[in-house]
Image (cartoon, rainbow, N blue to C red):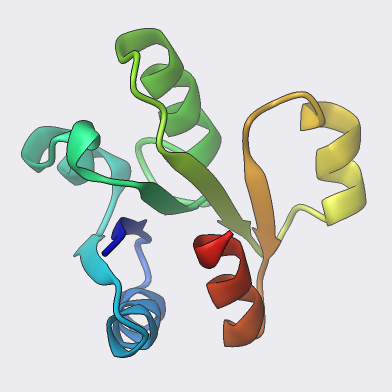
Length: 116
């Protein structure tokens, strides 16, 4: 069963995603921000990171950059954002190993990305 970290400063978003993923057989764990994730979690335990981009202290893109320099293990990285369009993201980060999930998103799309 895939283990997924949900990192988002919005508790309602975290809870909704966690409930949805758990209902579909995923082991989902939530964190309110990137700093708490880094302080309390072992990246190697996760198959996928669902990360909000607009968080205080460390954005999702900053977390991705930090992880790239720190670990050989690279879980699937899904950046969730309501401010970045998929077209703009492809233009600026097209070669990155990041999947953009634009908010608001249908839960079916979330499941499709996580299951791929």
